[in-house]
Image (cartoon, rainbow, N blue to C red; front, side):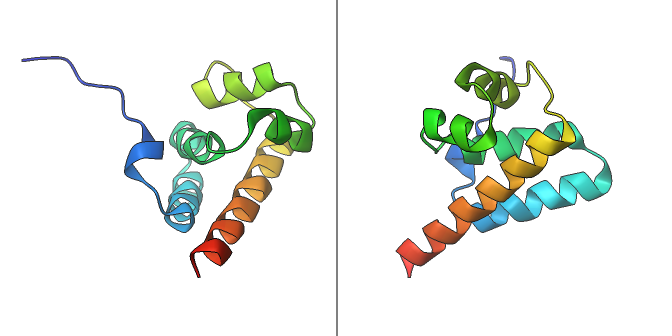
Length: 96
């Protein structure tokens, strides 16, 4: 029996609104690590330089947050949620 493969939420969850719903569910349950993994899966779709600039952090910090090497403080996490929500809205408008 082979080991478990790494899960890439970016490949399996393509509906941005669904991802954000799950992020909020994980936060409600106190599962911050899973929330950050899903949020990272959504943010990975963005231009990293632009996302980092909008978040007020370096690109390396963004990658560290997405990869789980660092945990963002509440201010950066809030900005990530806002940016993910904006991405969701734009995707919804494009799909319509």
